[in-house]
Length: 216
Image (cartoon, rainbow, N blue to C red; front, side, top):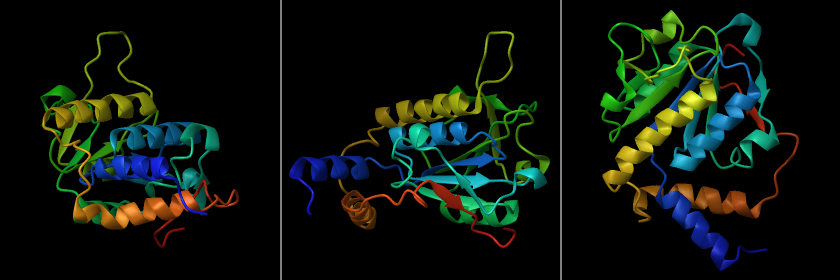
């Protein structure tokens, strides 16, 4: 059964506005609902890739499962990579993105709103309680903070991600990076979306994200 013209038009619009030079990396994020919320934020601003890195021994699994409710069907369209080894994870990230930006609280961290977010970058967000590990900090080029005026010094991980990505969206919108022009470099992605839209999801695997490295 083929897709109707309105559905095809929507898919073309979504693909044309994908920002293929952006991604998000989550390190040791335990809550699957937070991961699902990040998936939705990524989809909303046009990010195609999410990396999930689990390095804590009690959090390493063969796969993780993201709930249907929080991911709201976006899981089957996004490319999600799951790693247990930071070296393998960031080797992959560095091959595809020019800068790695982390949410670190060190003295050299700048405000999110001082960054130019219109060029290639990977955003790294750490564990809900302990933040980014020292090992992962070794791969980060710049750290940033989200300015806050309250007693709390941190935001929920999914909220911090959404705030950061929408500042990125704001800057890119001003630069007309979202223009609904379907460029040739997105032709493979368009075929992927069209294929996914025609197929029915397999409930047993659709929301599972399997580890991609040798330390499963």
